[in-house]
Image 1 (spheres, rainbow, N blue to C red):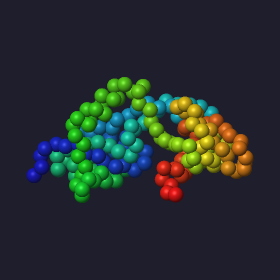
Image 2: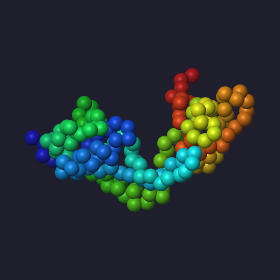
Image 3: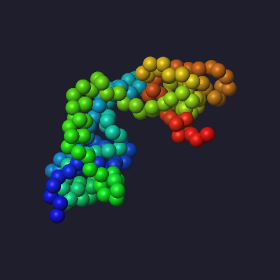
Length: 175
């Protein structure tokens, strides 16, 4: 039997990290869900939210029996992250590094839409919602210029990172 506790990663359904985390804690199993504060923009307001640093993942510190119990009957939990056909193990020092980084949250920036020049994106907010375009230029942390393909011109619009959704990355395109 494996009674030594090790850190493992449970993959969750999208937007279910907090629910999975809370269910695991209720089973008296040590879990870790690193959260960072971000600002989300809607057409009529902006709001500060605590969001997972690693979307879709919850860390658990378990022995073999607890590892099975942690995921069993846990709504929103999908599977363990695997490495070489075994549940992947995260070292204690890696967990400590994540916890240390959370002590300086202002230095953490989520790269939700990690876009680069040439990427195809859809505009998800504002008056241009639904239009698609290619990233022409990135300006600073949150400003980007998108050429709107539907307008068939060099017309560009300046948007925040939260107003776009990546459709196709030039990094994943093979020439």
